[in-house]
Length: 248
Ligand SMILES: [Zn+2]
Image 1 (cartoon, rainbow, N blue to C red):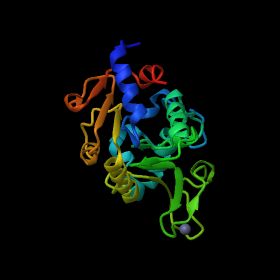
Image 2 (cartoon, rainbow, N blue to C red):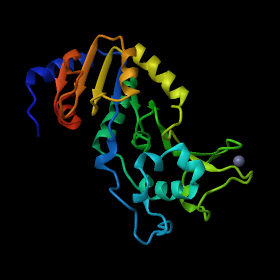
Image 3 (cartoon, rainbow, N blue to C red):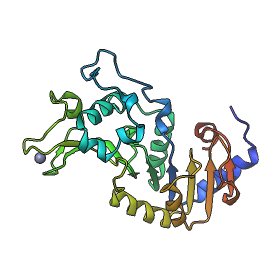
């Protein structure tokens, strides 16, 4: 457990007590603590041994090009690597949901696609890269239960209209969902406290979104130093829960 100064904690406590609109900017792959590390099962229904993922770039396997040009490869990879059905929220997700219950003025902006914030009962979650928890037909736009990607007998699942069913996840070479993006901008513009967490903000588009924040208090919680540390009022080089357990 990292060392935290009492002075920094009491300063953070005061900022939080007075904040009206808090935005958590959460840009890491959160769920590393809850994530299934690798292939679901060697004997799993979908483990087709004729597809060698090593032959492909990881970015390609989660790209729009792969989905439409080699959908069998895409769905195989997706089923093996992004199966979120059995992962559970960790203590961090639960803590944020608790805070929202108590204050109701918290917004989480995240690139995570696992839906774990909602499973922990957070309400206001803006998913900049979409979510695995929604599946739709790319032709008629009908929504489906996300489990259908796993329960379908088809290697490439289809709608009754013959459109392809796909996860509502932003793939490489696809545009970010404009609703989540625009709502994130307005949440940042209205926030008086921004808590940046688990990110160095080095990559687009996270680094461009952050400029919309105009509020007074900017706090960073990140294990390692970030280029933004100089701009923050408070910086904790700790894990989130190490800080939060000291905040009442
Ligand atoms: Zn359809």
